[in-house]
Every structure is written in C-alpha cells, then in structure tokens.
Image 1 (cartoon, rainbow, N blue to C red):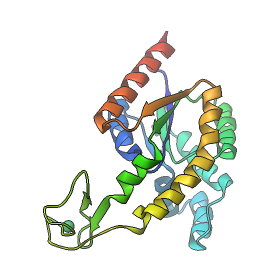
Image 2 (cartoon, protein in one colour; image 1 turned 120 degrees about the vertical axis):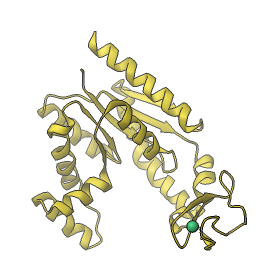
Image 3 (cartoon, rainbow, N blue to C red; image 1 turned 45 degrees about the vertical axis):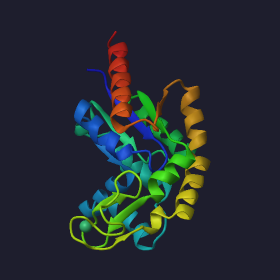
Length: 224
Ligand SMILES: [Zn+2]
C-alpha cells in the first residue's frame, strides 16, 4: 500500500475535526492535531515534552523548532509508517519548509494537502451561533440545532452561554490570523501540485465523500 501522508487545512469552524475522525476510520491513519500531541508529549514527560512544558507553563507560544521536533517524532514512528493526518501543522511557511526537510531526510513525500474552504461569513455564522450549557457542556446552535426553550439546555435545564472563543469579534480575529498565515501555505502547496480544495459550505457527509474519493484516486494513481 502506498503511504498517505496528509495535511488538513481550513479555517476554524470548517469541521476539520469531524472530517479527520472519518478519514482516520476510512484509511486507518494516525491523526496528529498539534495541540493534542503537544499535550501528550508533556504528559509522557519526554525530553521534548519537558521543553514544550517550559513554554506552556510561562504562557508562551511553543517555538517552531520544538513543535517540529514533536511532530516529526510522531511521523517517524511505527504507527505512522503507512501515513498520517496532520492538523494544525504546519501553521506557517517556516514550519512547512521544516516539515519538507524532515520528510526528505526520512525519504517520504507529502501525498496531499486537503484544504476545506469556508467563507468568513459562513464561519462567523457557524461559530457565533454556538451555545454551550453551563452544567454539562451540551452543545447547541441557535440556527442549526436550537434548544426547545431559548437559552435553556433541553437535557439538564441549565443556562446556555456563548463561549468567549465564539464571540463574533474573537471569531473575526481568529479568521484574520488564519488568513494571514495560511494563504501563503495554500499557495505554496498549490505550486507543488499537491493542494486539493474542498467546498466546506457543503454538508459534512458531502465533504467527507469528496475527500474520501479524492484520496482513493490518489492511492490508486500512486500504485500504478
Ligand atoms: Zn446541558
């Protein structure tokens, strides 16, 4: 079986986590979301984890070189020998170049970069409509999945609130950061001919079907 070495790109609210879950099932790949593997490295107490923890404890961003080492550590492991799905990495061109160098060293190539595209308006609509219950964290959406009684959780009667992260101003800021860092990445991978675009305005199932079909084709092509 040819490897599937994949990167998942897309703005907050694009549903990357859900797509990742399904792709992991379809293709039996390990999923490396940067935040998760950083936390895992810290918990394991590895040398890298200790280094990352120093920054996290101070509330500083973990520097590129440490993140790169943590990611490569996973990519260069037995569980990822048939491929991997990266999410949240690379986040900028420096990280993308570093990933290239390291994959080169391992004699591996990126198979595809999957970009789930969603307009800013749609992201704001999706995220700023989210509500979470204060007691058990049950999730609602004022438009797509409203509670029976406004502002009250159906399951436990507790109050529904909007998380700070989902506030329209915060969402806009997150989008600005994303556009600034990620547009150059999309161009970079487009020039290499490995960027695949997906219309994130479609339903989760449609996006998933499209990505799965694309990957199945890529796999077939690389077997020829
Ligand atoms: Zn609840």
